[in-house]
Length: 416
Image (cartoon, rainbow, N blue to C red):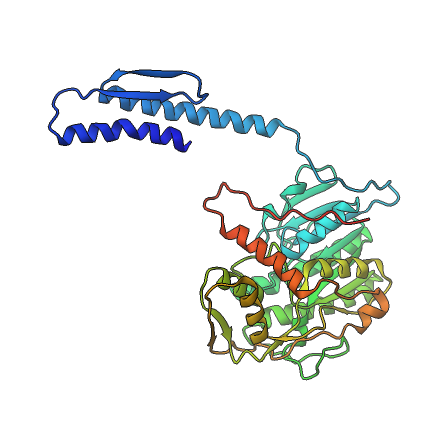
């Protein structure tokens, strides 16, 4: 395409040069002009008016060829990653709300590889179709554009309820909507599970502990939350979601699981979501100042997304009904984490401190005794390994120059 444009521009440059030197009348130029198939070459002397019309004609021909090429590409059968075959007794129909999001899309990959039928319901507030496009058209996969604030009617065996914005920037941008998603949305999903007798897993959060007085945080801790603070829409929304889950379980004798998810990172994170990992990596890759809010002595525990997915699936398969923490017990200060990212990425970024964010938890570390005992689960991916994969993904994202370039994270096929 660039070569064609350069050939188009040459006659125009010649016209400009001749005009500057005072040529009058009809300006004659030599034009080497290639039709899109690259075979037929015409040379001749033409007027500037004829040149313009032929250039316009060429543009139309090129556009027609591009349309035809896209049509032909669409007719080529799509190739999918090989998935396990399950018979009708083993295969489950699994609904994932928020399945086009960061965590949900990785869960989709794993369940698809295992041979189950997966239905994703997402309103694409923070999710992206690109996260699941590798499965679109597969006989075991279905994508539904729907907001769970409104009821959904489908037949399923299991439900992973992940739908909710999870980063402060997103959930604080529309706090009323966040509350509705975690209350009305959860009621709709629990109602669906009751009607079709499906097992349901509710994705809760470490934010239910607020700014904790106990460290590390066990599931028996009731939390220390500001009910009217800027984070309350998410914190209290998730606390109500847990309350609803156990109310339905007791009243309707339903099969409910609750996962309290701690800080998670990995490919497909939304780059501008404002969370620690994405902020630091993006700033370091662009040689911007790495911004730490507050003293940087706050602590966080970070788990790689594949570890979380393994924990969610193990919890769904278990018989344990009480809340379970899913997170990494290895704790780092924000200052330490900023330095780790800076050293990993390299570059000239400096670390700068800004005023502390309101209601920002000072310490966050899960007690995963329950997960170890009842699920035989604990994180496996080392921080350095997970961060390198995440940095590589962010680098590919930043290399995009226009919308047509496709950069998607291709999931690793699980080892048998």
